[in-house]
Amino acid sequence: MHFKKLAAAATLLICALPAVSQARDTTVYLPLDKAVAEATRTGKIDGSVKFYLAGNTPAGNVTVVSPGAVTNKKTNAFNKTDAVACEWVAQSAIISLFQAAKNAGANAVTNIVSFYKSNERKDTTTYECHAGAIMAGVALKGDLAKVQ
Image 1: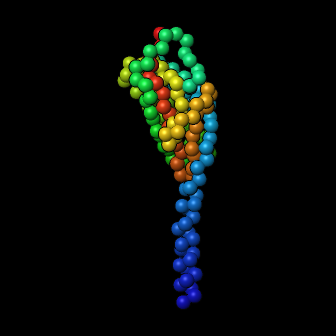
Image 2: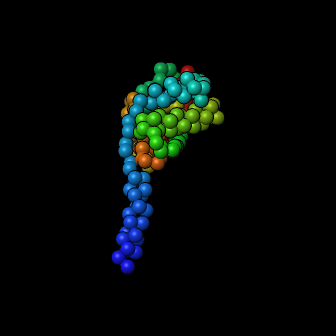
Image 3: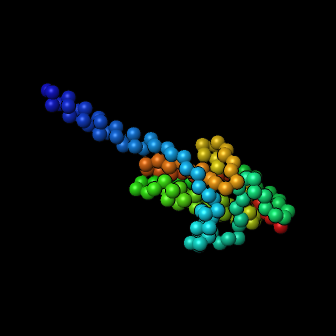
């Protein structure tokens, strides 16, 4: 009888371990320009759309075509460093905004803010990423605009 209780307790403990490791949610701040440069270098975007974090105003006349475009991307973070997973998912978010801009006839995404769980975070150089043991996520919000 004692063995059955011990086996049951061990089973519960083993089942609880993945839940504990999945609960990790580390906030990471990384430079957006690095993710944009890598997405351009690898041909995922073509450079025809420029990206401006809030506080960085493009030179020229800015006409907002579609305000408040949001992208919320997740990626597999298993067996990756937080930085690698975050850079990968940031590129996915950038590609999404790039495609939205192209579809709207825009050549820029301006006033970009991190928008994780609908919480705005403004920074002139970095985006916010949340990395866990299994998943990493980046949410961005920005205005699709024409800059002349």
